[in-house]
Length: 115
Image 1 (cartoon, rainbow, N blue to C red):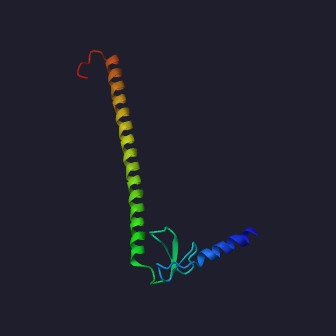
Image 2: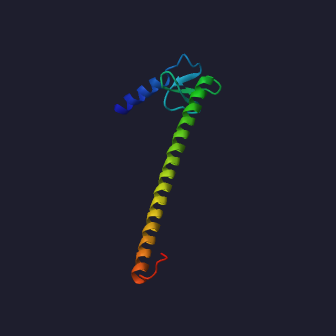
Image 3: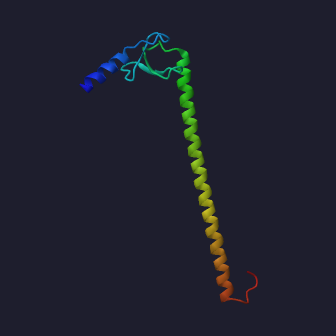
């Protein structure tokens, strides 16, 4: 019974015609049609080829560009953080090693003053 009710609701939702977009209907499954998000209402529109308004393409392109820029920025920041941490660790290890080496040489050869 639930499945029948859900199917009916989905069918009713899928055949709702969006007047602002001729050739487009609202729905989540766009078999053979292009899916576009309406920028004003946020609903997903299933449109026949050639019937999508040019503004919808701009919204999709801008959304994709924004997502790509955010992902690239996060990756760049993560790489920079990892590089900085690695450099700091290497510097600390080298400085500590040199300091210990200098002390060991001084203890074993106290007459060495050139260190």
